[in-house]
Amino acid sequence: MSIQEVPTQPIAGQKPGTSGLRKKTRVFMEPGYLENFVQAVFDGIGGIKGQTLVVGGDGRYFNDKAIGTILRMAAANGAARAIVGQGGILSTPAASNLIRTKPADGGLILSASHNPGGPDEDFGLKYNGSNGGPASEGVTAKIHDRTLEMDRYLIVDSAAPDLSALGAFELEGMVVEIIDPVADYAAMMEKLFDFDAIRALFKRGFRMKFDAMHAVTGPYAQEILETRLGAPAGTVMNGTPSPDFGGGHPDPNPIWAKSLMDVMYGSDAPDFGAASDGDGDRNMIVGRRCYVSPSDSLAVLADLAHLAPGYSKGLAGVARSMPTSGAVDRVAEAKGIESFETPTGWKFFGNLLDAGRVTLCGEESAGTGSDHVREKDGLWAVLLWLNILAHKDLSVADLMADHWARYGRNYYSRHDYEAVDSQAANGLMDAVRGQLKDLAGKSVGTLTVAQADEFAYDDPIDQSHSAGQGIRIFFEGGGRVVFRLSGTGTEGATLRVYLEQLETDPARLQIDPQTALAEIIAAADALAGITERTGRDAPDVIT
Ligand code: VG1
Ligand code: CO
Image (cartoon, rainbow, N blue to C red; front, side, top):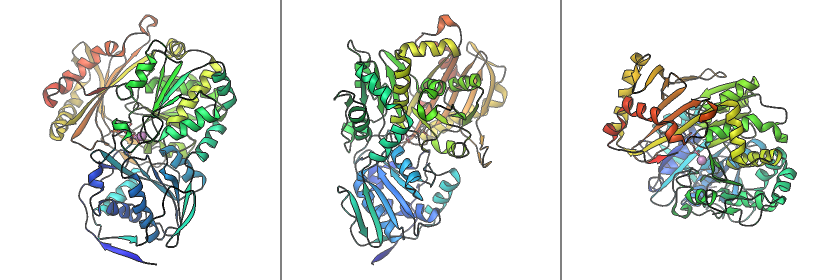
């Protein structure tokens, strides 16, 4: 066996963010850059001798080459087995499932999620542990500490096997098992959902469009929706993964999934539309001329999940990230189950899921999932919606109207200011932070502040403390604004402004969200001086 020990030095800035390490692809391609980080992961988790690892990614540019390097390094570091999706493809939830069921000791997922792909776009890598979920903050800190003292990495000389053929191959003492990326995932979905009822729904003429956005969910959606559930051919659009996602942003929101929105708001709109992101963990839900906000989707799923066989016993509890609207809390309250508020990022749901305290979780950024894996899961959410619609026989718009009539409506929107000068963004956050302690009772425009703080979280399971997780300002009358800087961007800073207003007046449940939120939007600008500090007079993306 020929293992090379390559001397190296720490590389500045290899600090994992909300969801692993994300950088420009060209940065990842610099000699030794990927190698340094991968070795820091292996060292940071205490070595991988004798371990089984799952490896796969969303198929973006550099995915296959990076996997080759990772396999050669895993072999050199003494791993026993690597399970790899054919062609290097694995959606994030499929990878999570494989880690849990094979079982494996952990996995490396190559994706920058909803960020665009290509030589001049973004790349990313994250480590998931043996529960199938993103590394905790503690593990991430150990990996980061290790990046600061890197001195060598290990790699074998032999080339990694070609990823296109299924089967088991040997790489200098390590077995590389190349598997069908879809089969195990599709089997799990068949167990959770009433496929007969969904099949019957399609037979009755129900029409849907699923936009895979040229990303990883194409093959999964084709197999599950068209082959197993009998949806007509052509239900899946943009279904072939491409290294640059057809030149778009694989971000399932009304801006980037515009072609789907056009279909859903067009004259011959189908009953149901959905989209998923680069790595398959997010979802957008849209009915005929009825966009469902991710926070509302979470609330509806929590309310009606018991209609699916996998959740027929009801839910242990629910969790949402702090910026997500309180709509799901209202459902939890009515059902008498626990609800938790965690910082942004799926890693914070892991302990609650492992402990059996929650069954469903979600984020305003179009992530919804359950205890079936330890990642958010785009297609899972779509199938749960289909299962619910199959039983309810209602249009999405009518289902939403029923939900709001019962629970009230949490009007919601997120305004993103992208690639803002980092200093200006930090200055804005500092300025708002500086006002916090005197804000309660003050009026801002037409509103009065009820309470203001900077969100910190104490994990109820392991008591770990996470500070600085976003600034929240609550207004009298059920309004809220949250200011937070993104942890997944690769250029400057992204300011996220999350806006929410609860409405319970039955006559005011069908207003355009930007109109319903006008006072909150004005208050956010008055508090933070967004225009003045960022030089932007409008957000880059409104979702
Ligand atoms: C964003 C979202 C967050 C999500 C994260 C990873 O993070 O806001 O809710 O968990 O992306 O999602 P940030 O720090 O940019 O706000 V994904 O689909 O990249 O795995
Ligand atoms: Co994603």
